[in-house]
Image (cartoon, rainbow, N blue to C red; front, side, top):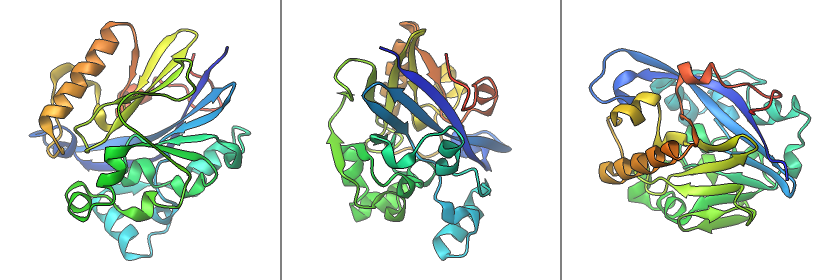
Length: 253
């Protein structure tokens, strides 16, 4: 059985460094990654990037987002266009796995309308609870599009063969999850925002604002254990690391 992994840059965001590394000064420019997993039983997307509204921010919501987070996101950089250049029909993608429901990870969900949406149950419920939505910066316009929904609780084996596994990495948000992919060369862990940068893991240097610090530290411990067991860690928004990652249509070996 051959499982293939592809990485796509779907825009860039810049924000104060302290947002990602508490206490640090300066600004951080970060890639917005999306991933395609090609499995014999169907294609999987891990995260969907930003909503295309941010390419031409006319409405109040989009204008607020690009004001708060400097956005570099041109037409042709959205997920659907990236997939088209890889000869992938977005209409036929089987699963869309959201690490969590923030605008730069679930904003492109509307482009993948036929896929089954796989989210941790506690994340989905938080994304529909008024208090938790406000506290975590969720906006339903990013993720609530009537998808066929699969809510999972903890670890979940997507195909039942150990090749693509949702791994709970709570803390950044109430129900954040990462994705472990078994390639021919070994396991890869796509961390999403459970681990923004290499420094996040190596120094346990947390962001300024997290939903639950203890849970995030526990998740980093889980990520570290997987790394020690041989998994390659794909940090969520690390530009230096991202420069080493082959971009689709090139394959990650």
